[in-house]
Image 1 (cartoon, helix red, strand yellow):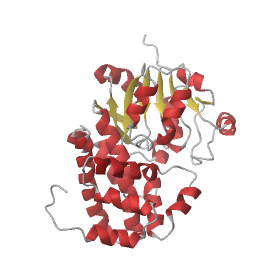
Image 2: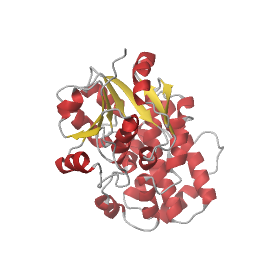
Image 3: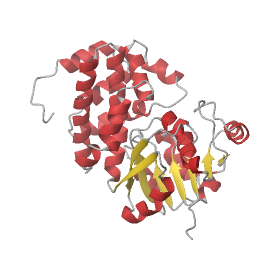
Image 4: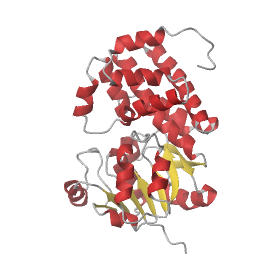
Length: 331
């Protein structure tokens, strides 16, 4: 008889809570770590997370904790902390599970490192995987059909450990060994979703949004190629699939941030007022800087950086439209 791996989720925001709910959908025990003691008490007593995922009634087999050592003692941990805090949270753990599945999408602003590089430095004894794809938290929590990329740095052996532990009838992982590609897709699409939100906020139409998605995808491919990601990975769930989803709905925090910018609100006001994290706002400046350093043309990413620095949205769009005409393939 196979012993069931013990699994937990590190981070009780909307996405972490949704993943815990999905994992517990078959009655499996899931440990959910939250920093806030009040939130731990609410989850355990009331079966709710009113702060981050108020629509969900949480499964009875989810148990919340604020003890990092309890997560460290598990076999598998899904890491769903904000990208900019992942290194410090993992660094505060006394030990680490055999498998760390990174579910945070972003690039560390202070260093320009992808999340898997941060995790490998902090937890060198763990096998690293990345879970990424088109995933709105409330839909996953509600048990609606979802498919994701599960990129395993430990190859097929790690996949054979993780896939049975994570897959559910309505949650379908697909195997990849391209960890860099899975991460780049998730990080870049957040920035492009801000740009698409601006298009919506300015009421520029569906044609403009479709063009921006296509040209943004070209930027994602150029950046990914420079970091040895595979084009077929970025054409899959964790790249193009996630890009289409988050560039098309106000359920995306990044799209909502861009929409508000397009409607004339200031970046400083929006970032100060947001209870949940729009990772693209942290990723855009470091992504733009990395692209410039590597001489990669990413004009849409550059435009988002300018918007977050306070530039006026219509002026930024006008500058994009005034770029020199050129062949579609290439810059």
